[in-house]
Image (cartoon, rainbow, N blue to C red; front, side, top):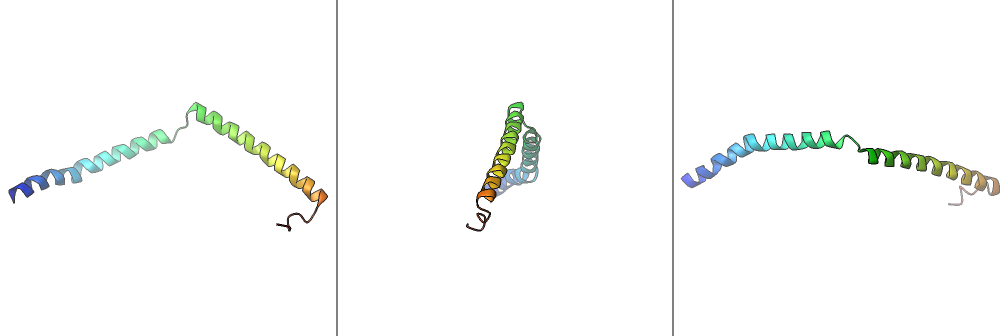
Length: 77
C-alpha cells in the first residue's frame, strides 16, 4: 500500500501542476511563432497571388472564346 501512495503523490503533483503549465507554455509558444510568416513565405504568397490572378484572367478569356464559339457549352457537362 505504501508503494502505491509513493507512486500516486508524484503522479498527482505532475498532473495538477506540471502538466498544465507545460501544455500552456508549449501551445502559447507555438501560437506566437506560427502567426508570423517568414520573408520567403511572404514572397511566395505574393507570387502565388499574382499567379492566381493571371490564371483567373486566362480562364475568363477562355470562357469568352467558348461562349463565342458555342454558347451552350456550359450545359453540355
